[in-house]
Length: 328
Image (cartoon, rainbow, N blue to C red; front, side):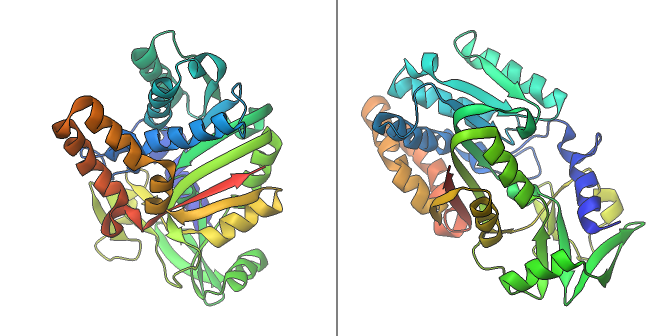
């Protein structure tokens, strides 16, 4: 089978890695910005609040998360929006797009424990179900989990009995590699369809998403497997591919040029592309920390600031991760 089919089965089959709840953070296979600090979601909420105050987003719009895991990011946003203006919890509508029923149940339970009856959580199984007039949509690290083809000098990868071999590439895969100028690397499958589905789902939308990667492909394979915070390149001879299949996370660097072109072709405009450091500072994360110091004192501020440093420091998440914002 094509590598993209193999990767899709690995992650999204009924028994795939993402089909059930996985710990993220110290007890899991990897960290995300959401698991590092609630101020990640808080800064996005502050950005949304500014847009709401300016009238750029309607106060009865949907706030939608895609790839929500347990729902921490959206819940953090709800908590911060309440501190900015508690009336927003009555006017805004909150939704998660989640294909797996087990995760939908976990998300409902988490929101119920966090907010009781104060916040109603709406679920959609897919973008195809959504027909909404206006939304602010957020996602963290979803595009690195889209299936991909592996391209190498005119060939693409196939997997048989957990052995990877290269055969002549399809015309589309060769065209994408040629368009972005690399001889070796990943070609994401599904960006175009996802962008078109986003355009169909929302008459008006802002989409803020964070991921690791860059505008220029690295011209090498970045695909790797995470096991208990250990990283194994896919072609590392220490990696037991069969043992890792469906039990560990598999990911790769996002080609943001490809992603941006897919959304532009679907009718979106690119509002911004920045490092995570620049985006979170522009969103107001430092101002949020200042509020903590004013209200709770220096020790509380220091505790949160140490977490935020992981999000912002160039040698950690600050430069490696990027934010892109699209507007329709």
